[in-house]
Image 1 (cartoon, helix red, strand yellow):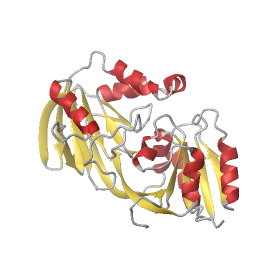
Image 2: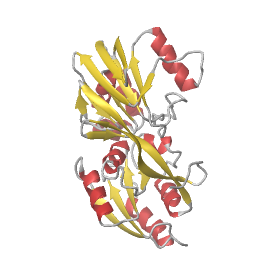
Image 3: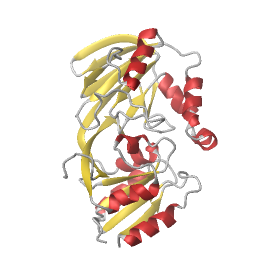
Image 4: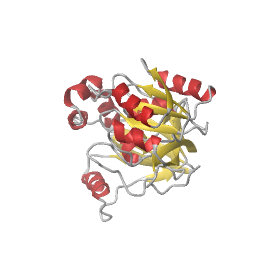
Length: 301
């Protein structure tokens, strides 16, 4: 069979995938399609971006990332605005980006999407300081959730780690004051967390945030969460798709967040904070090309 790409670079996080025979699976399928491929192995945060940049400079046709959402984000950081397509090979616990893009949740099936006829989808990214995110960032109890759900917990509990982490993060939630400037709109409010979302999929149990959130609309979606009844009902309504329980939110291209007291902010599956408040988040519209299934209705580019 003819391969759509002559030369690809695969970047692998060896901490992902459990006991899955990663290289054997890749070798079998790539050989089937006579695809020339090479491998880089990450050892620390930032390796993915460094390997991706080097591969792009060396003229590869595509870069594939194997791992969870933190790995996908790391690799994408080296590919933004290059025009070189990125392939998502899910190897994490939640795999929210793969879910967001409608990709298979197994390595073999995800490889076949790349090797067989497919489409390219151009998606947005977010930037906070000198860091990036593809799905979302959050502070308050969301930051506490990221601190709770570490590699050890994921290895121990699998997908249930997210439920355990959510319960632990919600113990004695601390309220903070937020001053948000969303484009030209100023908002003052209080809450237990602030979340800025570029994507819709949570990745755990197939949960979606809200139908109006699109990863390619050039906008970011801002939530301030409370523990009151309105917020709880709003979240339930968003997840279930019910429009009679709306969750208050705002949209914009540039978001400035101030918090009292100052708060750490975490991004896509990362175990270290991406920034602290005060901070400014920007939309990078159409910054990344990703490989999606042929059935997805997006323009080839």
